[in-house]
Length: 400
Image (cartoon, rainbow, N blue to C red; front, side):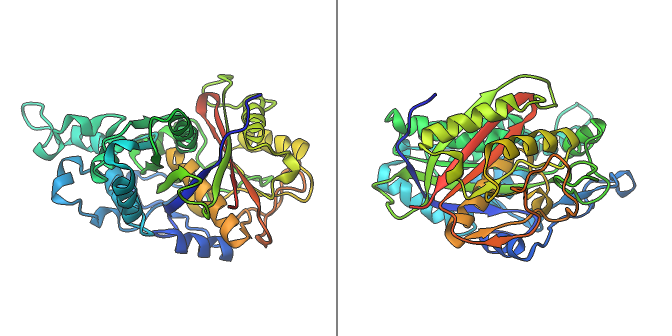
């Protein structure tokens, strides 16, 4: 088992989802059990849209990047810019740059689609010579590292820069990577986060796997019919505990890659449980110490069944566990950072969300999985993120 880690302070964080831009609408939506999902209105032509529900962020199309960032213009980076400007995060990151130096602040972000939506669009707009439109000829825009490079440029940072793409665990694993860089003394702070936008490859790709629900997703419901896809942007600033003593902490993390199947979890949740065990060990906690669990809870048949069984056998009945996918949709590579933000809000406010849209829990669910929100003291919160291919990550956050 891994040894304990020194806690890291999360001195600023933000999330932009289908519920709105920034933390305030996210918090209010969770408190009101109000879903941000809506009938699919994404993609052209309209008659070819999938009959499903999505978590779309309003205002992305209207975002204009500053002149110095114009070469990076694409829908994913516009959503990133919208997210960076929420909750004063941009100023917090710039203050960290001044405090430590641009070369001592890392950028570590997660995404599963990056700018692929605009690459798809570019192929439909090639000229007679087979060239992309002029605005789409910036080669780095069409890479998996587009998001990381854009955020680093937007924040004028020069330290290590990583883009992690491990499907739905991408922006959870950014916290683990940041902790290692800081523990090794390579950086003094890290901007971590994740951004994923809706695009044809995502919607039609998941539909081809028969995973997309024709109705708003119902995590852990006995009659669930699949996932609702969404988009989101979220960021957090990690510093050592001395620099921000009153901030919430990253207390532990666990990662595992069970490689059981390309898209189906291990039937006994072996990789997920290994990630959980490592997170608890690094945090120095027993399962009984966890007050709130943000479940991966995608509303797909097998994922929910396996996760519900894991929670039922490892946590006491009083633990409050819920999935927030029904609020935001499954935001893929951005799910980890958004749900980390939900955990941080729980620590800050005592709000433990319910599982919106769900009515009748699956028989595999134990008493931990709650459909209604609750209010109480949250000292330690766990966030689960389980990606395709068995890329699993568990994060534990704590009050200061």
